[in-house]
Length: 274
Image (cartoon, rainbow, N blue to C red):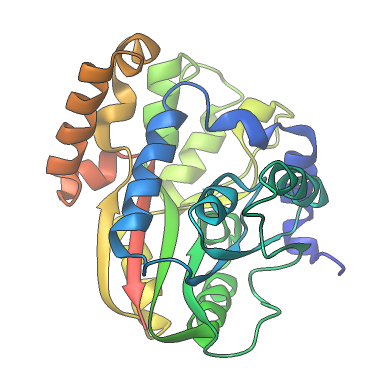
């Protein structure tokens, strides 16, 4: 299918980046483990039917397929779909049900056929509210009654925390990016530095909850994915110590619904039910 002009920059960015390896490095490992546990906390037992819209290189889709779920991955980046298919081929006993290039605003699935929809990228890569609502309404359409959606957002304050923690707050080229992030939530990287990410919308927690509710979902739960855990000093050393890793995860779980933890988290998860 052709890709909408509104996400061409995102396709270009991920064509150059190596998204397939990101979750195995640094504090992104905390993002992955927490996302997995939040999915399993609400997901129906296998073999449920899961749509992973904007599923990237298949990290979560292939993981769920390995647990016996019927998973359909959709992503606008051809490179990601190729990587997801390759990852699926490495688990031939439990492969993906499908992996196709597509748009989360136009799901190629019949209504009321899915038990779960993962939106772990579209809600921050679709920079216009109406596009995000279209995406969420599509998720609502394809879900069976009682089905669950997981929508990940990037925190409105992520650029501020990241620039302070990683030493680029003083970069004059980053200053206008940060200013717009904090004033509008609209992230635009005009520097050519891929470390400064790509087009995105950075949500306040209440904005993300409002969008899920506007799309007719109920019982919306807001959860900090990493919380302040991503700020851990010498993260890799801590994470590679099993006892300290579990202490970190336990601490994040204890504060996951706190408003302050939602603001401090790089990613926020909104979970809603049809």
